[in-house]
Length: 250
Image (cartoon, rainbow, N blue to C red; front, side, top):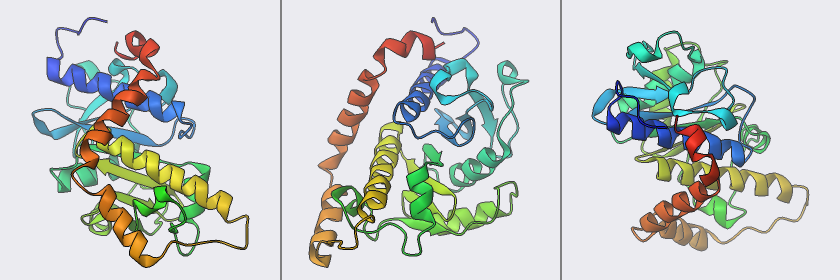
């Protein structure tokens, strides 16, 4: 679809990218009916971010379904008036976008394996290469009920600290990034690590890599050499839904 004249080119491109990300999260079965949410900071508008219109399933998300809101949850664009936003989504995402200028994309999921790991006392274990990406490199936040209270925002920010990802205890997973590609890469690896852990724990005989190897591997994931791979992986993922582009970019 041709870009609507009333929406700036950079915002429309961001909307199309975010709609694609919603559909990829659906493609990889990381959805929870109409709940959970993904947000993206609006280019050149640091106090505004895009989030889903509540009630639209991720596999049907379009650029026009997204809603531009400010850090207080107000809908700021005339063309978005009348759209409903998930309150819990606003609370979680506004906390991180407001506190950290380098966070441009936030993904929050409620997958069965992610919740299962979040409910385990020791959290994510170093059982796989995917999990070693997060070795001593992930935050935890205690469950406080459905995130309706803005008072929780400060605790969310404090618990995340300088990490990109966080396990929300008894709740789910959260990943952030300075780009959509980075945030997608983080949630993909975190979700896969949780899937492996739940399967592996069906055995009573688990093998753990040495601490030395764990520390070495996380450094490999954090090296500058990983950046081109992250963008390449995002482009590859987009190719999986290439036939949907005309539908989600409208």
